Image (cartoon, rainbow, N blue to C red; front, side, top):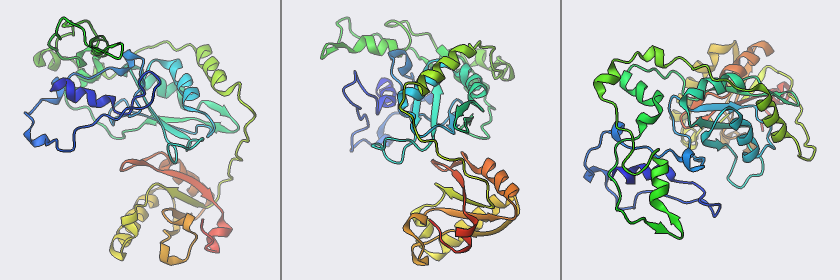
Amino acid sequence: MEITTACLDLDGINVLGHGKVTIKRPNDYNPALAPPVNPLTLPRLDTAKLGIVSTTVPDGPNKIFIGGLPYHLTEPQILELLGAFGTVKAFHLVKSDPTALTSKGYCFVEYADPNLTQVACMGLNGMDMGGGKQLSCRMAVQGLSVDNAEMTALQMGGGAFAAPVAAPPAAATVVDGVDVDALLNAALGGGVGAAPAMPAAASIMQMNPMTMMQPPQVAVDPMAVANMLDAALGGLPPQPVPATPQPTRVLVLLNMVLDEDLANDEDYLMLEEEVREEVGKYGNLRSMKIPRPQDGCASSAIGKIFLEYATPSDAMNAEKELKGRAFGSNVVDASYFSEESYARNALS
């Protein structure tokens, strides 16, 4: 049962280049009937050891948000750049839809070695991508505290993730020429029956969590990073570089409005109040518009939030603070909007 649960982490992987696989529970699966399991003792499949980069980046202390990516860069090109800092465990490049040729300019990533999280953030943040673009890199999960020393040790201890697993039968299980047992053993980080035992809780509690949270001194060759960047950006046909918008007093926010927020006046007013309170922290907010279908605005304006600040400086500060922030399961995007169009209510 533990291995079955661990295999859910493989949902969405591309197996041997033949296409992505969907892995999920059966429709009639009832989790209430399953025996209780301590999540800390569950084995975790280290898909990076199989040369697989998961397409799902789970929330946690090692999830990184990277913004400011040139829209035309492909997943392999970005992965090549990220690989300069270490082995990538999970990666998700956000697109408007799965078939889109270009991205929305940001992604999420997690490295196989948790110790590389802060190193990669420092190395990637502010990196010049050309055309006036700089990468913005930060921890995706804001305000995460580590109060539990046992959890900290498990997150920072690498091999401690692998729980003891019973040895499989002597006869190898081969499916379509693939030794499933060998793949499973590699994913769990060792030979059959040789996975390291979970450290005792008493020993873990004796560790100093503040010491473990210090980023290690990992050497990153700047030339290697530069070469990876050149490889990612080079060899491509010339791409039109979008003009960097000039700061205005008006911002437009994306990924903050749900359909249900516009369904009735009560939900709409609640959204308006919450947004006004939050965005007002970053500058002198003069007015705000959240278009609804009945307002007669262009359909492209529905689902956006328009903010008018007193000065461009206020808008610049708000753009810096709001862009890239998590809003539920989405990430807020912020950009400048024409003051003249806003005044004419020509929202789009």
